[in-house]
Structure formats: structure tokens, C-alpha cells
Image 1: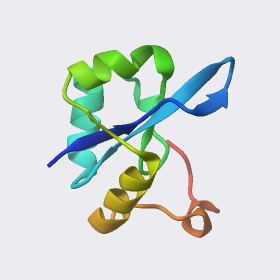
Image 2 (image 1 turned 135 degrees about the vertical axis):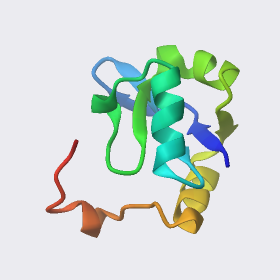
Image 3 (image 1 turned 45 degrees about the vertical axis):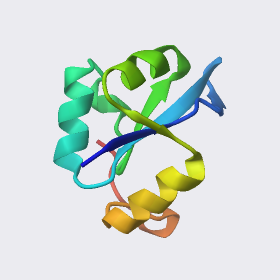
Image 4 (image 1 turned 60 degrees about the horizontal axis):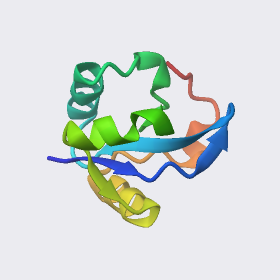
Length: 93
């Protein structure tokens, strides 16, 4: 079980953002996020959006840095990936 993080490359709200995912379970992901002080509102169906300012601390806390390609590949392999088609019509928590 591994929590993965990509480099902060996604611009929004005057910062860059990373994606934080699990390659095995949402429970693992939520537990890691809670331990790191990431609010549940940052969860977007299959990942957490985290600001660049948190990147180093999340890596120090155990998140494995990977490329976006590897992150998506491992998320798909885990069966946890929510596709764009699936996202339409799903409520966000």
C-alpha cells in the first residue's frame, strides 16, 4: 500500500497543486490525509488536491513522489480511478 503524490504542476487559485492518491484503498488515502492535516473538502472522488506549499511535508510524511503518468497508471490499476465520464453526475464530498 502506497500513497503517491505528483509534482505541483496544476495552476489554480494563485498556486500550483499536486494530486495525492492511494494505489490500494480510499481508506488508506483518507487516513494518510487526516494524519497530515489535509481537510476532507480537498478530496475529489479519487484524489486529494494539495497546494504546492504542502508538497515537501507530504513527501516527508511518507507520500511517494511520482510522475503524473505513473500516478494515473497506478490509480487505474488499483481500480480506484474515477473517469471523466463517471465524474459527471456524481456528487462531490
